[in-house]
Length: 384
Image 1 (spheres, rainbow, N blue to C red):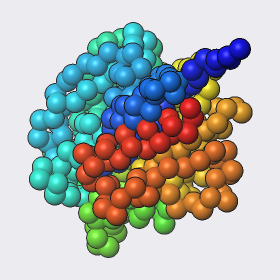
Image 2 (spheres, rainbow, N blue to C red):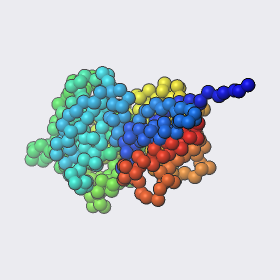
Image 3 (cartoon, rainbow, N blue to C red):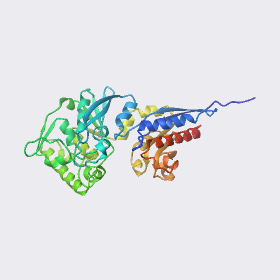
Image 4 (cartoon, rainbow, N blue to C red):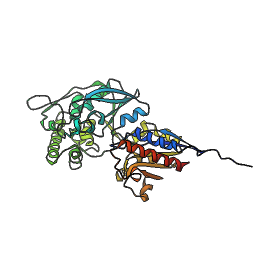
């Protein structure tokens, strides 16, 4: 008598964040899935892959929403230094997702030249204004990756605020304009009043001070010591002016957790009455992660770097926390966490691109994708 064993079938949910600098979350998921599927054959069994590219409220949020079923709407806005940018928002009939990174983000600066004083958040406000024409019940403000430190002045200028200097001339809204604001005139937008605003971010920095927008994030936007001092003084002046202009709790909101996110766009959003939520958990809910993981045997997540910040609550940590008792595998460009700390994230195993090559893959999309396919095949072989 001969006994036969049916080929094994493993159901995986591939739910990564982007690998910043090289691949979008969708590209990471595609490469891993290709590798996983290639592990099957010769009676080994089958790996079924469900792809759920994720975001945590930073860059890639619109793409993640579109991949999960939202519709992309394109609109031209002013880029970080005023040049036209073809931006996109995501909309599902009730919720619109609007993103700083694809409207006025660092990656949109002409020639990659940093403009710490001249960059503006105005294009983000224009995208919000466009989203309002779709009559959403809510707008999710995804704030990561900004090029500006303007306290959200540019955004507010696009949404009905007129900022005038001492001579009565209108100001565009940028870091250097903050200190020049003399008066503010606000034209209420009824559509905005009827729409729920949600700030999806895990940044906890206040607007001002040593942990504020200028001091902490200014250097990565090109700000030197003198620029940081000027931006800090400008933000202080801006807060005082907004307080005098009648915005409720303008001074108190500057100290709110997250007010310093995206160069102070977090602060402007709070002035407009936005609710702040955890970016990672909000997007897991928005993209229906819990339902999708319930139908899978293994969850595969990841991001560019697994490190102490991951432990502090970045997307892979949220995925792991919500995956239950099923095995959780992380894939990263590199890992700074030793194996004995993997249990802190409930990770079964961590695969890194750095273990597969001596080359720097962090800015090489083709190499990163090739390595992810290899890792996917190794994961699939181990699962079968």
